Amino acid sequence: MSALGRSGVEVSTPAFGAAGIGNLYTEVGDEQAYEAVAAAWQRGIRYFDTAPHYGLGLSERRLGAALRNFPRAQYTVSTKVGRRLEPADLPGDDLANGFAVPARCRRVWDFSADGIRRTLEASLERLGLDRVDVVYLHDPDDHAEKAFREGYPALEKLRDEGVVGAIGAGMNQTAMLTRFVRETDVDVVLCAGRYTLLDHSALTDLLPAAGERGTSVVIGGAFNSGLLADPRPGATYDYGVAPRELLDRALRLKSVAERHGTTLRAVALAFCAAHPAVASVLVGARSAAEVHDCADQFEATVPDACWRELRETGLLPSEEPS
Image (cartoon, rainbow, N blue to C red; front, side, top):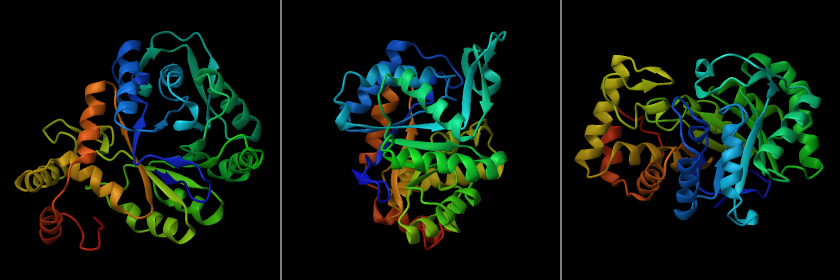
C-alpha cells in the first residue's frame, strides 16, 4: 500500500477501474459485476475507482453494492466530479458516450462549487457510502479556469472539512495535470494513457513535477485502451483503431516480452508501476477472469534482460525506470 501525497490515504499498487462494470461498450450483468469486484478483493486489490460518467451512475451503484460485503476501513474508493447527472427521458442508449445503458440521464459539465458538492452527494447515495476517500476533477480540459477558480477550491474545502481524504484531477493529458501539480495542493493526479510502453509523454513534464512536489500519480490506460493487451489488426488505441505504426511497435514489444518468457501485459503494467512518483496503476475489468489475469500479470517477474533489450533496441528510452 502507498500513501497518496501527504494525505494518509493509502492505495494498493494494482487498482480496480470500474468503468467496465458500468457497461463500457457492452452490457455486463449484475452478478458478473459483483464477481469481478469480489475477485479483486480476493487478489488483494484494495483501491477501487469509479465515476458518475461510467454508465450514468451504474458503475457507482454496482461497485457500492459489491463493496458492502467487505470491511469499509480496509479499502479505498475514488470517484469524480465535474460531470453532474440530471434525470432525462431520452430515447435509446448511451453508446454514443461509450456505455451500453439506457439514456435515462444527461451529463452536465459543472465545475462550480455548488456543482461539486451536489455531484459528490449524489455519488455517495449511489455508492451507499457515507464518505469516499479520493475525489478527482474529471476531464476539465475545456473548463480549465472554472476548474481552477471554483472546482479545485471546493475540493480543498471538502478535504479541510474531513469530508474526503485526498483530492486531485484525472485527465488524458499531461499539460493541465502538471499545472494542477505546480499551482495547487492536490494530493494525487490520475493520468490516463500518457505513461505507457507506447506513450512516454508524462515523463517530460508531469512525473518530474510530481516528484518535486511530492504529489502521487495514479496511472490509468496502461494498455492504451487495448492495443498493449492484445496487439492485432483492428485493436484500439486511445479508443480508436490503432495506427499501423503503433501496431507494429506493439508487436515488436510483444515479441521481446515473449522472448524473455513473459507477456506484453506484464511488461506494460510493470513499466507503469516502476516510476517512483507512481502510487497505483488502474486496470479496468468486467469479469472475475479479467481480474485474475490482471493480478497474475502484476505478480509476474519481468527479467532484467527484457528491460535491457527494450532499451537497446530503442523501444524504450534509456532513462526509463524499471
